[in-house]
Length: 213
Image 1 (cartoon, rainbow, N blue to C red):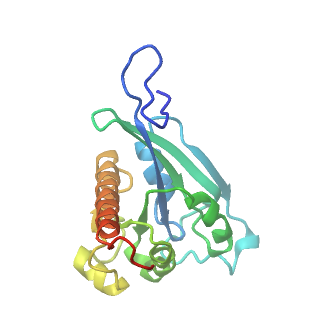
Image 2 (image 1 turned 30 degrees about the vertical axis):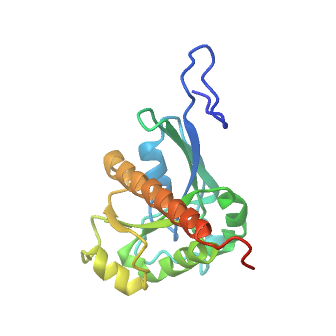
């Protein structure tokens, strides 16, 4: 399939092409972004991982993810088509380390929303990504990636309280390795983003004609 804008149809079929939707998969270092995109992508995902070296010692904390040997240095990319919804998701994964955050503005340009993955073993690492998308006004869903070796299981309500997440932001559990779980998170984000868009349109219509901004 080759999605186009403006009600285009697929060549020779007369069937409307799926609408392209750009989604960001973000979060701190080692939360499972590359894993989630790889789990759902219908194409071989583009992954820009490099091995961690001694140069990163003292910069990239491996607390809680001591077994991690690679890291995303540019982006991850995958694609997922939903024929029934006539929608194709283009998934862009951001680098997790603070020193690569300069790439985020370009990566997130034009995105309809973001999934922020959370690792409960390293909750403080989630403040930055959540704050980034809140400040930009980007609809987001917080997905708690439930690692098997996490010492505790926290409810979405407990994670919401710990990270001071606003009530309108969905907080869900997930397993980034499980395609069905990851797809559920992505569809939750799409639904949330559409709701956010409808509310914004309703608010704009409520502004009286001639009212000053």
